[in-house]
Structure formats: structure tokens, C-alpha cells
Amino acid sequence: MVKLAISQSNYIPWKGYFDLIATADEFIVLDQVQFTKNDWRNRNKIITPNGPCWISIPVGKKISRRICDVELLQPWQENHWNILQNNYSNSKYFEEIMRWLKPLYFEEKYQFLSQANIKFIEAVCFYLEIDTKITNSTDYSILAEGRTERLLSLCNQAGSNHYISGPTAKDYIDEDLFFRDGIEITWMDYSNYPKYNQLCDKFDHQVSIVDLLFNCGKDAINHFKNSYEVINS
Image 1 (cartoon, rainbow, N blue to C red):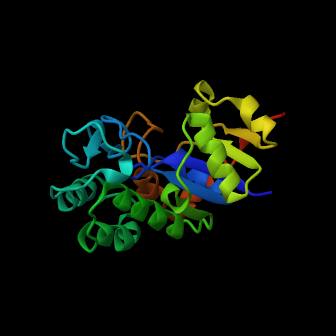
Image 2 (image 1 turned 60 degrees about the vertical axis):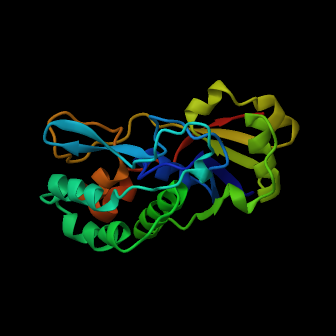
């Protein structure tokens, strides 16, 4: 049984995103869909002495484009690294994480947003020894119309009969279509994650995984749950 998970391309996503990846046999980065402004595609939150703060990759104001078509035309990498260094240099695992994270900001060139996002996602997975196969929706045939139909198309092409989803997708996924095709759906449970020593007074789970990495190092993987609620057909 091939367990498949699919999610849109996000910039240095939160721990739940990587928990989802670790739960699957294959994870497809879906970036042939509409880019959404003020969303997780090109930004995320980190912890500062004043609380959570957004860091965003500049992508321009054009709205009508797919995620895979978003080009990066302005310098941003040095600025983002400086922000991370200023806020996490005193964290327990800063030096360890810096050795592989800093080169992603200074030694890599990114033409497209999703290209950058995937590079960071793969690097985090490598560090945490998550061996899930990561592919891109562009590796598959033209996607079907409709949200559920698109996901079913990818499941069928990937040879999966077990789809794992984040809980917010319950709002739009037509489960009957999955059951009709003999594909089981399970839902990630992102509640009750354990806390860790965060560099702020008020703990916040909804921040980039870099916060967890800087504070916990490789033990970050033990803060995942790898659990999900099974929906029986």
C-alpha cells in the first residue's frame, strides 16, 4: 500500500508539514495551482524577542499565476539569513543547523519560488533523516479539473490507494469520489503537539520548522506525531 500525501509548495513550512511528509511513502509538491497572496507559499513566521514575526520572499504584485510560475526577481536571501541569525544565534543548536542552512541562502541561486521552497524542504528532510520520496506535480501528466479530481488523478498516477491529508482539506474534498476509486483517506491530527524550549514567553506552534530545529536539533523529529485519524470507507 503506497501512502501518498500532497501539499502546495510552502516556504520553510511548520512542523506539521514535515510530519505529513514523514507519514507518507511519497510526497507530491503541488505547484501547478493558483498562487495565493498573503499565504504560506512565500512566507512563514519565526520567533523574535517581541513574539512571532513574518519573513517573506518578495514575489511582486501579480496575482493571476500558478505557484510554479512565480519568479524571484529581487534579492532576499542575505536578508532572511541575517534575520534568522539575529534571532536564533543564542539557540542551543544554532551552530549545527547553520552549517547546512546558511549555504541554502548564500550558495544557491533560485529563479522560481517553488524551486527555492523544495530545496529547503529537501534539506530539512535530509537533516531529520526523513526518507520519504519527494516529487513534484510537474513530474506527472496534466492534472484534472476540480480539487478532488486533481488529487485522485495524482493518486492514480502514483499508484497509491491510501491518501493522507491535512485536516483543512475536509472542507472541499469529496470523500465519496475517493471511496468510489477504492482509495482510503486518512486525516492528519495536528492537535496537542508537545512544546519545547522556545525563545519566547508565550509558546507558539504555528511557526516555521526552523524554530524547532534551532532549539531541538535532530530531536525535532521526536516532536512529530506521525499519527492520523483513519476514515473508514
